[in-house]
Each structure stands twice: as structure tokens, then as C-alpha cells.
Length: 310
Image (cartoon, rainbow, N blue to C red; front, side):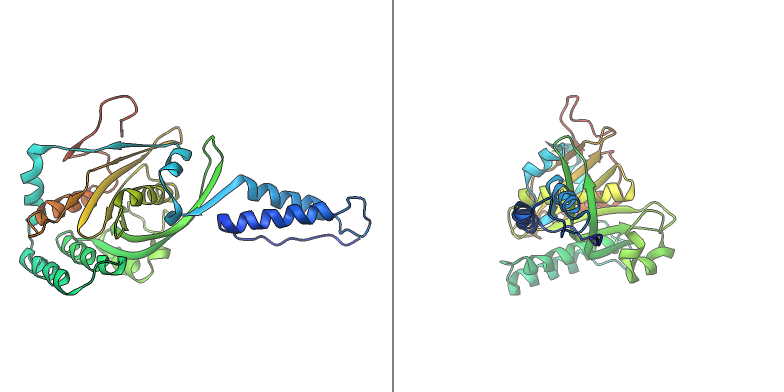
């Protein structure tokens, strides 16, 4: 009797998985286990496939919400701005070095986009985002912008079940020694895909672009951050969710017991006259300069045993 060999399949989407499960159940219900014409091991293989589809819940980052965070045992909390630090933050954002994109030029470009680019789509919003990111990297030596960075499938095993996530990060900002810049820019997936490809610690900040509803974007960016931390062996990573006009900052911490903690700031706007541009740029610089640090210079966190980041 011929044996059965089932090739390994990539994980389907949740919708595909449900449809495939129904087909397997329907097919199995028509089989007679005592039928001698059945290939050896067919029923066992089908049961293994069914069990695997039932156990692993697979989703892309774009499909996630706050319920997903609860399922992964990632607890949210707020970041509170230290009011006395506002001027220091703005000074950091307005600071310039030789050869950087000047703040006056940055303002000019932002006004140009506001006057001539429709930002009702995410593509339009990204033009605003690009300008701010270019300004920040121009004053932060060694920082590189990686658009559309794919994070491979990452498995989480909380008590509620097994989860598998994958997706694309809108922007990954990395700070590496300058000798690795060409490697990172020419082949970012190879350079940043796994720890050890670059022999130095990688400072990484995750950015999620959203036309609106930044709060929903935080959940997606948090799971992307948790996945990246797991792949790279990091315990802390910072991130930003933005429409280009509004900006939110967060810190994700992977805890020793396998759970996680994400603390997020309020939404900050550039202002109708770009009066808050320096402030937003200062917070951006802080997120990049301290991308994998839980030490907060400009925010405090809630008190209590569940609020700790370190």
C-alpha cells in the first residue's frame, strides 16, 4: 500500500485556515477508516494538519487590535510627559549640526506638502512623515531609514493559545556603526533579519503610518515590536505611530515571564502653524537615540507593581 507524503505548507490567513478546516472535516466525514484503498497514514496526516490549523492562530499586523494584546498578555499603560522638560525637548528637536536638513527648510517643505498634497490617503500622509524622518536622521549620524521592512513569522505561546504573526513595518529606523551603513541600505533584510548579521548592537525604532485612528495603530505596532524583540533577542524597543500631523510614542518591554508591557504617550500635533514642530522632533530624536533603553528622560510612568519597565 502506498504511503502518503504531505509537503510542508506555509501558514494561511485566518480566513483561509477556517475554510481549510471545514474542507478537512467534510472530507474526513466521508472516509471509511477501514477502507483498504486508503493510502497508509492518510487519516493521521489529515488529523495532524487539522490540529495544527486549530492550535495556531495566524494574523498579519494590520489585522490586530487591543484584544490581541490581551491575548498575548501585553498590558497597556500611559506615559506622562514631564512638563518641566518641554523646553529641553524642543531645544533637542531644533538643534542643528553642519550639513543637516535645516529647520527652516524642514518647515518650508512641510508647508509645501500641506498646500499641494492630498493627505486623505496613507500615501499622502507618508510624504509628511518622510520629511520629519529625513530631518531627524540628518542630525543623528549612523541612523538609516528602512521603508516597508518585513518581519518574518513569529510565534507566541501565552496561556490562551499559540499565535503566529507576520507583516510589514512601515518604517524601521536603525542606528548602526557607519561601516555597516552600506550593508544595511543595500540588503536590509539580510542585515537586520537575524541577530549576529551585524556584529554590533542594533538600535531600532519601529514606525507605523496611519491616516487616522492612531490608537488602533498602537496595537499593530506593539505586536510588530514584540515580534522584532523576540527575533533579535531584545528586551526593549521604542516605536512611533503617526499620520504625519499627529504623533504618538510608545515603549515596549518584554518581561522575563514571557508577558509584555507597552506604555504610550498622548497624541501630539505639529500645530496649524507648525508651532510644535521642534517638540515633536525632540521626542523623535529621543526615541531614536534611546531606541532599546527603558530609561525615560522625558516621561514618567504610572506607579504600581504592573507599571514597571525595568
